[in-house]
Image (tube, rainbow, N blue to C red):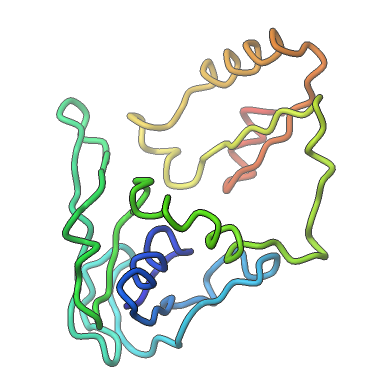
Length: 186
């Protein structure tokens, strides 16, 4: 089995099935400088758009499976849920999908914590005080998705509500999109 992004449910599915795994194009991962990440066995060959389907499968890969997509009936937003067929794929399958349902990973939570350990040089505990509130701001591909991208008013209300809990909170923003986050949190 090969994976295209940082784990998601991919590595867990491979481990549960007793398969090897590999990440296609691991050099594109933004996390390798601060995580000791096992990228599995090397994936060679193959081509196609990110998210699939592949035009050519990688060497040694015989099958392709894309997690079942579920769209919100009113706005078409991608709201995928657990795909019971995904966890029964044969060995030698390239998989794509978001795999964000907890059912894929909950039973291996402790192992995942070990897999995603931050390198000692990058470990930081400065943001763990009682006066710190961490905001996870998702930008990137969400910015142009009006049905899922949260407006400024959402963040303003969230900060105001947290200040009711602790008026002295200092806010730390974690993001995949620094440029957009700076517009929301100057």
